[in-house]
Amino acid sequence: MKAALLQLSVSDNPAANLPVTRGLVAEAAAAGAEFVLTPEVTNCLSSDRVHQREVLRHEEEDATLSALRQDAADKGIWLLIGSLALLTHDEDGRFANRSFLIAPDGTIAARYDKIHMFDVNVSETEQYRESAGYRPGTRAVIAETPFGRAGLSVCYDVRFPALYRRLAQAGAEVLTVPAAFNDTTGAAHWHALLQARAIECGAYVLAPAQTGAHAAHNGRPRRTFGHSLAVSPWGEVLADGGTNVGITYVDLTRDEVARARARVPSLTHDRAFEGP
Image (cartoon, rainbow, N blue to C red):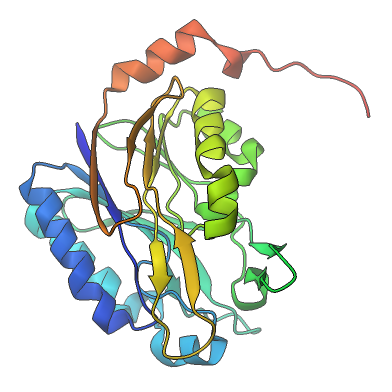
């Protein structure tokens, strides 16, 4: 099965971002991709909460979600919308960072709200407090697909291996990690983290990414690492998207998951222990 990882460099303008995304989805489908994946915050990348309140929409009103659902149906493909920044009805006004798996008939097969929030001090001049704007999800999600059970996650989740082990032990064979990974931490950790999750779980890891400098009319501009990555269940990097906007293709073979797990069946070797 051919998968296509879209690498984007979105701005803080959802209306301007959508045509670019749809064009790449159409290109990937025309090239024979049956599963197309977009990065985290496909609709809007912004650190300005006031601006986000002006341009973001609730799920049922979001133009990106509506258009991409239609594209999936028109082209008969599975489509992972890595995540969308969405308004919620929460009393504290925080947004949702929500991943959607769209079936070939355009229906939503699964939703996943990012669990782990990127609250870090990368340097003295670069700090992030994702939890100030986004409320964390509380539930891990697996979806059935013809190419295997898919376990959903988003970006910073990749630093929390317990989530992926839970997904794998529940049957996930493909782990999706759409991201807008910081360029500093990406250069240091991105490849190693994704390969580790693949090796530990004996699963494919598909990680479509945002890349480059992101245009912002309001707030502080962001830079992301790129390098959309596909990793085999044995931990081999099958494809690396580099730093340009575009599409990275990879062929998935479900038997490879069973083969890797048979060689090193560590998912069945958990033992209880005491301490520390």
